[in-house]
Image (tube, rainbow, N blue to C red; front, side, top):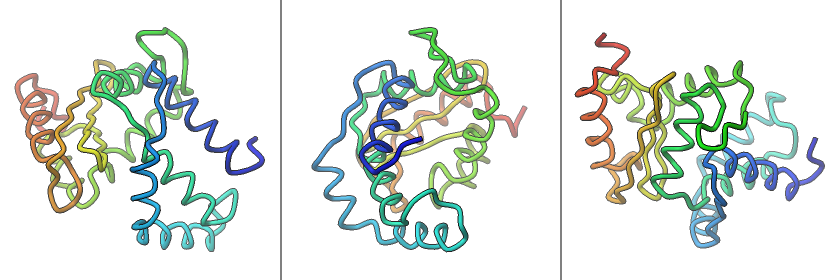
Length: 183
């Protein structure tokens, strides 16, 4: 187990790199911006801490979480990350197991329920795939057992999700018949 903030951060960064198959790095600029405006996340961290769900101090957990949300990743790396989840935790490029297969359904369920913030319910209905967006304009969807779909387009909606990315992923999912709710 990691003993301090830096060890926790390095472990998460290493897993991100294994998922993406590349050298993912922290954006100091994004991290600084997010660290100064993440009041909602700080409140959630304190709630989780008070309920006994955190392994460390609430602000340490929030710091590490904010860092992992501030990594730089391109569309190919994001799609590889999605394909790794689609393959049950095995990176299809490196053929290395990154995540235990039993953990992947939990990750995908969380992505389906909360991955697009306030748009998650609408996303689930319209697209029918686990998804996750980022403040940099990236968006990812996972077709379990098949592939990851990724897009990058910075204009964001009021919830912080890529406007055009949502449309692109929805179009691909519809054309290929991957919406789990409209089988």
